[in-house]
Amino acid sequence: MTIFLIFCLFYFFLPNFNADLKDLNQENKILSSTKILTEENHSLSLPQKYITTLHLIMIDGTDLKINDEYEKFWAELQDKNLIGKNVKYYTGIHQTIDSNPTQLEVNNKIIWTEKDSLKWVYIFFLLTLCGTVYSGIDLFKYLKTKYKQTYQ
Image (cartoon, rainbow, N blue to C red):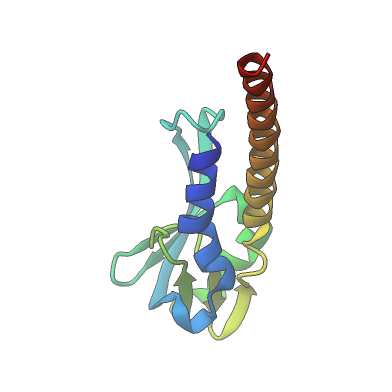
């Protein structure tokens, strides 16, 4: 488990943590409409049966999904005055392009920044650190026991 956490930390989280905005994938689209959908959850990793997401539909048909982690921004994003405005969003390294961008701007106004989306990096880093320390202590106890059994 610890090896998996360390792999995920280095592959998914740290590249985005240290990246500048210019290093991220940038998309510029025109907002066509917004809608909130409640969909059935088929993921085994999430305990909820239904997930509510805000969908930003662009003129070219692109559907940008914003989950309830960013629910405090939904009212601002559903403003009818934003229809037809430029939406610029940045997606992180190894991140899907169609959901929860790292930074979102509408009509050159920043809605949220990469710092708002980093709380999961801190949580994951803390879990990885705890798992590594626990595994190290457990390994030390195991080796100490084996050493005593071998040399007695």
